[in-house]
Image 1: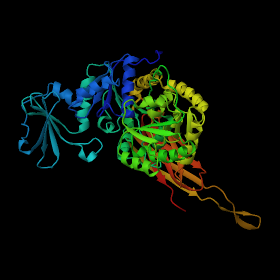
Image 2: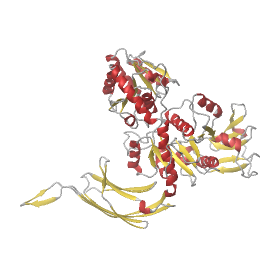
Image 3: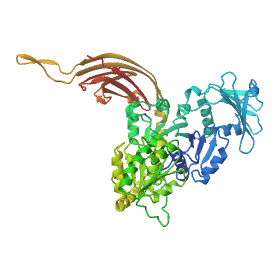
Image 4: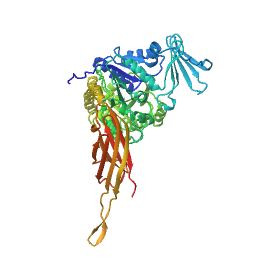
Length: 595
């Protein structure tokens, strides 16, 4: 069925975050920009949900509105404040009395309006901090142990709901049960609800979630693996939990195709995987448009190890030697500030590199800079580079995962430099500072490129995702179990002995592989049949590289018989057999015994 560009399906639109700070970085800004687009261009009234306790919730919202990060047509709700105001609905009261911890009280806090808000205790049994969250009249509505979303060991197994009479009205057995209850409350009465998650820490507490009306959408904003950032590099515990739940999502969205391909290589190309970049709202140029300074360079970003600003300082030392008038303005705060200032002073660059700290108007400097510098170790999809292009500021960046290569073309809107090559990075910056005409050309190209990432263009991609989430819902699958039985695994080593003429001789030849197995799949789906499942076999060599092998598959109901005859590389060490069924996948690795 045809639809207008950017037209969204009817429903409630909810975006989940732990907390939203007016000074937050790219992930929060991108989430807020998406919601502004949903409201102004998509014709819906979205809500931003915050799941962290915040006594200053209303003040935060006011600051976000004042800075234009939030608009009146986008709601902002808080988990704690919701139940503080609305209570627990029709749940019965008159249960067991809430245990008295008064003797172990450690602190009492009020809301900004002076009303009761929270009491802290030191639990005498576990020695953990326990909170009672209070109604304005001082009576508790919730008792919950302190926990951190990223620390699984801290997740409480008992959260008490407290009725107005002070008795226990019920309990949650997990943080996720509590979070999902709120989402269901907000979705009640709506045809459907689209629940966006931008935080990797929230995903394990929300997904999977039962219900045909609720559609879970996760956008990955960060690098999901650790150094050296290959597709099969180790992932952190947090991302392992996220990747394990992709099958329970209606849409798993990456910011770049390359990251999507890396994830597909790791866990299979699922039907619920999509790509949507972050939007950028190209600002109108100041009038009169300022003159670009041929000596000015700018960095906007957090002063953290990930940003690798010691490389930028080292490169600037070389730039300064070639262009004595050059100067570098760095905007941002972070834990690396003292170390970076020490490095600046050690190289004698004080006064030419200035750490300005956080400045909400830092992006204005990009209108007059000749280059924006990015030396990060990795990125998810940097908004700062797009903001630079939208202001006509050429970008010089390491060619890292993920983002810079997807946003700009080397030599057109700026330069991409091999990762870690400080000398080459400096050369490219010098080239720009010595050629105002090159800066002018790249400036025009950058502003043109930034328009491709405007709110309307990105909203159209989101419209595709949410429509696909609705359309694919009946096809969703769940693999409960796969029984794997290896029938044959036989390899013939390379370099077999043959006879030619009178003497035997060793003739180099690739080894041969014979493989056969049976899979029995226990899976569920409302509409999708196992006939749509795809099986693949790949050979792994000693370097970890994968090579797809031809695989014959014969299916009888839920039973799959597979076999392969192939000539893989000589350094074959293992096989990976994978089954992908719509949004679900299963795989196993088979080691090849040495000869």
